[in-house]
Image (cartoon, rainbow, N blue to C red; front, side, top):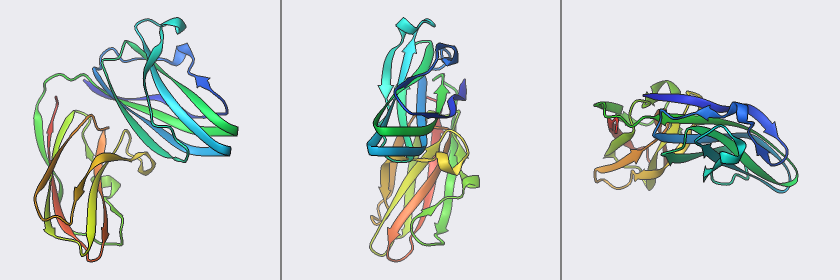
Length: 230
């Protein structure tokens, strides 16, 4: 089983915050969870900083909740992701917000997977393609692939025409199909190195696409994905 859960619709906070008990979500069906904080507005002085923490508990009582993990602190608008596993039954979020007269508007989504053995799938994320447009180039949102049912992705990039000076291909992932929701995955591909390159990603969020930056002549490349449910 897999699903996308909106832990927090768009909200604005101006101080430290803990989600009310009544809004905690039951994630007992999911062994693996990947979360995203989408910080859409941040204001204040003295470097306003937002840090969101996921809390979990076996029972729905305030005193039972403890920290499961914290997202990278954010000092500017943008998205950050966090991978969690083996959470207790109930999940909620809390946050610290520092600075002078700070204000932060954010959305929090969770992608849950049960980790049950299911199957595998081969997907050509990008057929051989000569890029059109200036760097950076991002794959169209309607070409992003839905990987909700798959926990592990093995991705191979074949470099057909190298960029003139340098080039990097980065996978992006998002819990929802919204341009503003995509965040870069950590591992990248060197498009200026002619060798085949393969990387494995675990617990990316639901939708996956590519982004390319390059210097010099335009590269041509191919991207293939083998997806597995565990």
